[in-house]
Length: 269
Image 1 (cartoon, rainbow, N blue to C red):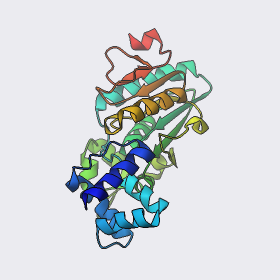
Image 2 (image 1 turned 180 degrees about the horizontal axis):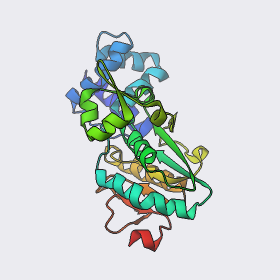
Image 3 (image 1 turned 135 degrees about the vertical axis):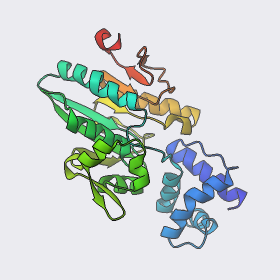
Image 4 (image 1 turned 90 degrees about the vertical axis):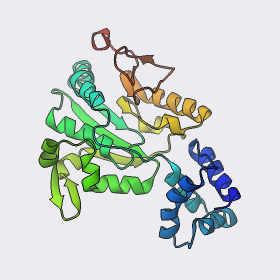
């Protein structure tokens, strides 16, 4: 890749998805874009970028931007977060939504480990008296395809998944593990760019968006946080990664990453 190639990808990533991409990190860009170039039939990443530039190819441009979006994820990442969701947040929501519906959304879900962690926890201990709907979204279509398939390698299941859950929720394959249809069918999927209008998605009682904010430009970070805040129903929760902050919402003392809109004092105490 030439410096001009890298500058173009950084600019497209910023304009389309608010992503902070350092054009000086040549190895990172090459590593992320090489699979895209191969799939699209180009001999090199440079040829891919030339096609984006010369043809003004919107589809190829999006494939490149999607490849630059963060992909790091794992099952039950920061396990204390899931313990608090299952042990504190969901019972509180079930009490306040008794007889109704709880909507949960994993934004920027990557290849699905996080939302499936939530689904497995619900399969094991769903709050009584309510209907729970689970949604997941990501910017990258290929990651969503992998997530919906629910097939993971030995390396992937070893990252955060206990032996008990592996036996309970997965079936062994020759080259990996397949998640049970029961858990996969709990989740509804959609490609979503968090920089766009999120009002069409409706409101949610719990939104998880962990590990994304540090990859966004400052203006985009504020925009995404504001959009996520507006998707929260009254009494809803936004769960970020530990150490990530949402200035527009109240942080819950003693619960790193948890932010609430009208969170009850009983849960926050």
